[in-house]
Length: 264
Length: 275
Image (cartoon, rainbow over all chains, first blue to last red):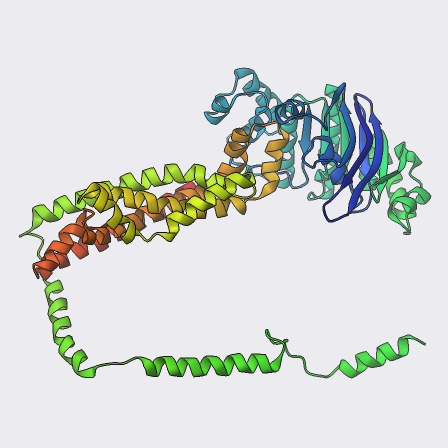
């Protein structure tokens, strides 16, 4: 479904953020991208929808090659890639509903969006999504009135209303408390399953990733160091990704948490 | 073994006084600048010539002026004052609306983070021209072209508003949070949609505030522009001074002050509402 071929990004400063990354994501697979800060995780997902222009290499979304597209074709393809951001990235002075409907901007013309006259089907879908994430009664609130977890739910709705085939998720839980983090991760993974979406989730919290995803990619210095199932993440693997540290603690914690999850 | 000298260096520091490093590191430069500034200040003050005899005479005229202001005369020239005020208000509102409408596209073009370089340079050029020419000079030119009257004043104020509004709007756009704008771009939005959803909500309160401020400035400017024949309350004020009718002039000035204060009050309410 998504295929990266020799994807490379060199910033003008000379920093090589991605070194010829090859990756294939089948439809419906949720994968976590882990790695230390500066490993190129954010660059990788931004190169896919070209918020950052890759220096070389190819990105295939289905059959379409994205790196050579002109601006209007790129906008058409961006509709198929929903993005969820670390600090929610909501437009704070717009209402929750406007923020969600902004996910349809790729589909409606300028005047319709300017006058906020979205097709009824979009409005219905927005209500359904808000209901699904439990924010239906917040629709007319302004985005800056919501709590962190609520804002991230709005961000999820905005990404999903695009009717994407792929979700690009950049540190969805970095600014949330541990409980909300889990709720958000669970929500994202459930929604991906419901809708058969593939997702790439950048995440710092290794334990959290292990609980929810089917596949983990470890990135270090812009290159893939690990690609496997979450339970294959041993202390040795974590050392190759992050460097020397006592990892037993992290992993044990995961085991306990998994039991907790399984219990109810 | 290697830790011993480090520890002793710390020991040396403990108990010593600490002072914030000076802003200018080199002492000779620091003291040079301070002494130079003091000398300049003394020289500058002593170079101002004051003719105390003239000041003494002038005090009397000043007192007459102020006394006239204590008894403002709204009545004897009321029709002139009313017409002048109306003309000024019309000029002010029209030029602010036109100025703001034109300055929005120019402001967008002059924001480096959203406009390509050629557009940016063109728009910055327009702003620079508009800001470089002082209102009075523009007004004299336009009065020469269009003749006496409020049309020249309206055009002058519109022209001046464009430079002012575009520059401040562009700077506000440049300092917007780029994360929400990026999120809007990621949805596949077109450029106009991106501006409408990602940028406009962030700069809107400031745009409204600036527009109200510009309305205020334009009203005050309209009083000045009358002096060079560009119509409005300024023309009435000028006539009053020419006829030595200080009581009428006082009435006009009081009206101008009152209007500016009213505008300030209204703008405060509006800005609080759109936050």
